[in-house]
Image (cartoon, rainbow, N blue to C red; front, side, top):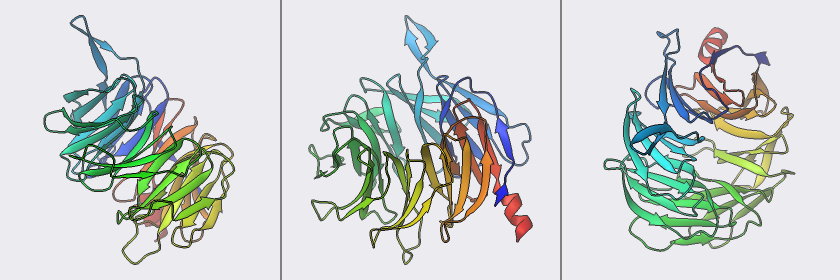
Length: 358
């Protein structure tokens, strides 16, 4: 196992909750409790790591004032030309890659907890404390449809197609809704506590959900009950991610829990393949490399670990200076970005290590 070195990016003045790589350029976006998002240029030509500061302001009495609210979510559109952010101030915003604000999306009554572009890039989906989800027209910034069917704050959302999505809530339910349809097309009941995260599998047929009830459940659109109930974690499960497999590969799901472990599951068999137990604090984030061979995990123990999916072996590690909220891979699978509680963002360059090895 190798100890990695990182390029540390400083500028945020508060904890950094989220980070995401641009799909087509070496730009890393980060979102913080300092009411800013930042875009860092991580291209090899740029040794200074220039940062664009995206200040989230609100209009008050004709003046623009800092919102002083956390950035809770961010997502690049499919070609990397626009960045959407969601904030505790209740607004979603769309930004250009040069840091200019393109539009402000105003309709939620309270904090936004999740935000995602669809594949086509014509709609943005958001979810909030106000118990609603909204589909926005990305070109106009207007609310296309608001869905008010949950009975508690909505914690996560995931597009199945360009017009159909799932949402999960504090109310313990998962709803599947479709643009133009004024009621849910599917309701999944079975969790006994808040549902923290949902993800459709790469083919879009299976939906995975994880909950404070310490279980992961797998659902199909043609069934009313879950088809798998994955148990093994001993505390709340914060998030899940599917391995980006080819059509004939096994369906593998990774889960991150407050019990300090990561688990890898063979979903077709409903069995746990590996329990990854080197973290010593809650694990907040897991991300597969684009080829699906490696898994990065990030914990409040300040460590990013990189594991082999095949063997469950720890391959690389890095210990930062703050508890880590999120970890993400660039599209080439050569760099891992992470964001931390002490305001730092850092990048691990695996490409140079792997090229030396092979």
